[in-house]
Length: 516
Ligand code: KIV
Ligand code: ZN
Image 1 (cartoon, rainbow, N blue to C red):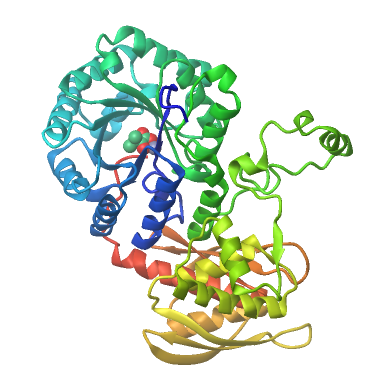
Image 2 (image 1 turned 30 degrees about the horizontal axis):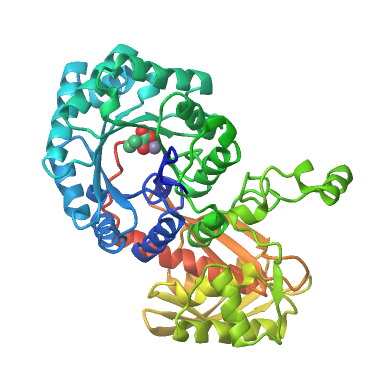
């Protein structure tokens, strides 16, 4: 991108707001992997977490701040000294650290949640920005629930925090209430009425409760916003946040209208989306814009006819521009180590020699059992072989007897804290029996909230990708597993969820943050 071009800054909050999606909790090494991918993609600011929330969050933000050099690292803090000091402690080693502090500004929040007056909240907002400024000039302030805040009070608060030193003012549509033209007008109103507004970057942070987060963010850009807060695949509280891939591709595809560029290397979008799905187990709906399985699939004969004649007839952007390769199916049992390595590089995975050796062994095993190996198969191998943490529970073997005349029975051996344990389970079907065996072996019995099976690629020899969601103490965790045998994939997914739950339990003191 030409450095003179007008820029929209991309502030990614996948690791903070995104992690607030039910079941999306990630462990520190997974967060670091996402952060590295965000850096590779060219994100300007990575909100790495909410350091005061728990010891685990603190350490994870600190690790990201120390490792990532190519993006600013933000830490979230409520408007009080303790939060701000903790956030600074976590991010201080970053190449360019940012403190993001917030307090509610709507009368609804002030009356029912904070139980404080407007004057009191204004004072706390100013004090918070001053405190943050004592550490860094890179300070972002958010008046939470801005879209339901009295406009005069909002202007007063924005002016005051800029005067106190905020370099970015973020306008959150916390409950996803705004409508695009209204949200755009709000940004225009701030630009017009706040005398010192030009001293700060205006940012927007939109939730998707009415399905309008991306539209609201774009409307804000047309009216003066220069930073968009967003997440990969649009994950986040409730219905989620602005989907980064959608906002970025809209700006790029309709540059004629917006006239702005972002620093995002859009060819990394698809891989980032897949990585997040692999890590969180939260699938992307097939019709999701940009990264859904059908986003570039043309079904109608008339459309296909047009495309054959000239792509521009029905294609407003190419799949390649978001990193979806046209040669999807490539490898098979005759593919050598070098071919696998080269293909992985094209997919964005630069493995070390020992890593490649491990992946290649799994690839060969799979290629012996299955004719064609797809990108998704390779991703599943990489995730299972390289990215799994040191785990409390491991599957050693599983044998299932099932059918319409037998009582479904699963005999299973597992490693639990390095001890070998075996048992048998029974159920109404093969999966039920398998889960019964796991529960007996691990002496656990969590509520199963969701069980879903998906074929990674086409054909009856496709790997099954299973997602299992368990509930623990009001929080939920998602596990996933892949295998040619869906029962084995189910066992892997359940065990993965249990291992993730162990991490969550260690971090159980995490406070329920006072924000949506
Ligand atoms: O939605 C919201 O208001 C937030 C703030 C902390 C920016 O996430
Ligand atoms: Zn939010």
